[in-house]
Length: 293
Image 1 (tube, rainbow, N blue to C red):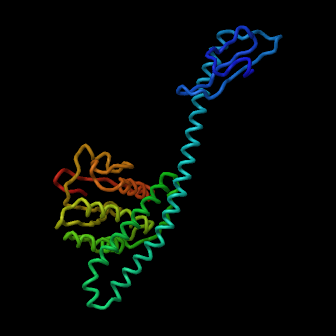
Image 2 (cartoon, rainbow, N blue to C red; image 1 turned 90 degrees about the horizontal axis):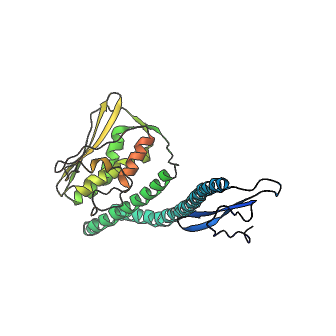
Image 3 (cartoon, rainbow, N blue to C red; image 1 turned 90 degrees about the vertical axis):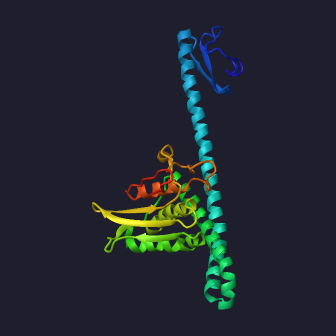
């Protein structure tokens, strides 16, 4: 049939054959193949209506074939990305861990005279390594979210201790910018049931953004309160704020707060997805020149 009726032919019906009908499978100008039907000589010949129906079916088949090809290409790309991310996480995570351990050892055990001289440099190395570790963690988390495999291990966690730990992680960075970082929470806050490491990642992204976008000398607060049986945690800064037009997009996958903003735009997207996975809600309140909460 392919020799008698080339797949490149535009005609869907071949009256000279009578009992042979074909249609090309095309998409976007690309020839994907051909679709043909035959009938025994004892049956009626194909009509123009048959040819039109076959061509319509071929058009739909072409679209399905193209979608299947695109899906396979996407799946291959996702698998390749996951392999690269796993390799990056492993190959960079180990040396980063060694750098952090070495810095903490030097900061703790070096002679006092040497510590005064080297501490500023060691602090820079430690903060940079911690920042790289958080970036790798965000890459892996974003990939896990995209694949629909974000896992949670919830357990009862002391709320105030969790907030204090998040603040402790970032105090060296705020001190380097002459900023203050406070935890404002009432006594007797109830425990929350959550994945501790995931919520620390949420707080790290929120506090990191507040530090990044706030000027030197700014005051940053991690606030918590009980509201109707829920614990509401807020990160508040005195930064430049966000315009009303941008507010609906702050949790989008690649939103960065403007083309010149630093970062890859994953942080708030990760925050939203982790909070949603816990059954919680996240939102932003902000206005230009009035900070963000």
